[in-house]
Length: 52
Image 1 (tube, helix red, strand yellow):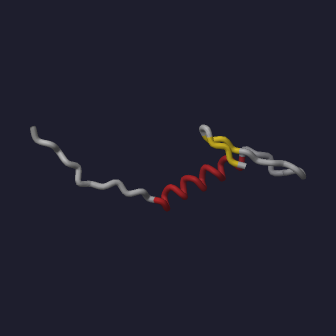
Image 2 (tube, rainbow, N blue to C red):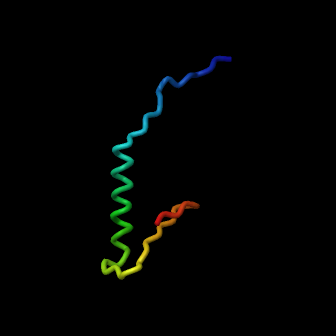
Image 3 (tube, helix red, strand yellow):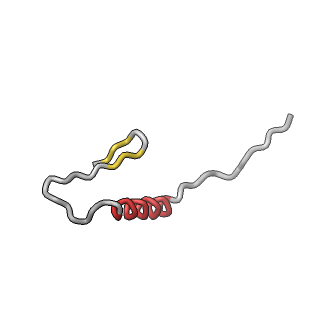
C-alpha cells in the first residue's frame, strides 16, 4: 500500500499572531471602566490560565 507524504511544513506567523493578540487585548480593555481607582487589579482568565 502506498503512503502519501505531505512535504509542506507548518510555519507559525508570529507577527500575525501578535497582531491578533494585541487586537483582542484592546477590545477587552474597552469593556473595562476607564476610571481606575487605587488598588484596582485587572485579572483575565483564558481557559485554565489566569493573568493579572
